[in-house]
Length: 424
Image (cartoon, rainbow, N blue to C red):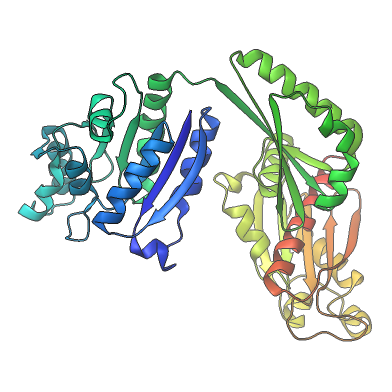
């Protein structure tokens, strides 16, 4: 089945709000065996909403809409849909009960304006939004076919959801995706992620080309490059889930034969997730020392729930005084080799490991830019280090003059080196 997504809101078009709804919805739908073929962002304008609904319902089996369902005058999605389907707005007991319950829990007065959110087109099925006051509305069958002059046996669905991301996510997870799968009897779709580091996308493509060309027709490969790493996603679609899993595993085995030394993890969306999986499974602990990354390594690690099981803490040591007095970097090392050096990175990693009593310590020190470079150490020069129970390893990176990209690439390179050391 094909799906169109319509995200409504002036704030999306002017860049005031990032449209995270589209990516979240696409991920959930794709993993459920449905194909998103179009994403459309439109303003809070009745004529535009109406025409876009008509266009996308003609193109796709299902259209999912977010936005424009609040209590204010610019929230016109509901009334526009009602007009399109020649429907009248009626008060939904389900929606009203939810709204009333939310207001009571928050000790708010239920005003007439807020009560209007319980009004829905009389041709819809209300899906209870238990985490917000805007109802979710499901339209199907004759309602759509009659309005669009489609054959009576045409199967179409329109779902209108609130634009608040956590409300949309709750509805997708608890009802909408399952309801779509049941209505359209979708096939199985199974994906597997392989995280690769240490080789560029084009070089990786050349390396695995014979393997990629031999993949069965029902297996699709996607290259998803990120700063300093590439994520490969294998996706299989078909009627038998066990067969799909078997085919994907065979493909993964073939990939390891060609590119195994570059693979740092499976079934993870990011390298921090790979680190988390390894450190939990092996009951290892970690501490970080950062200079040029300014806490970005720690931020990536602690963004994951449960990181306290393995992450002890970190030190952001921008100044030489902090490197020396907090991490134990030798004063002569800083004078002789400088803050951006292999020797300093090594002592930072070993120092944070010792002081925070961790199994592994990591360090970053470099020139992120845009200024501060020298002929010997140009902008983008970075040293990283990983200190473990058996040894300390270091690596020199030359990453260019884009500050944020240097920070991101340094973080991914460091965590990839950590993964290799922790799995030796």
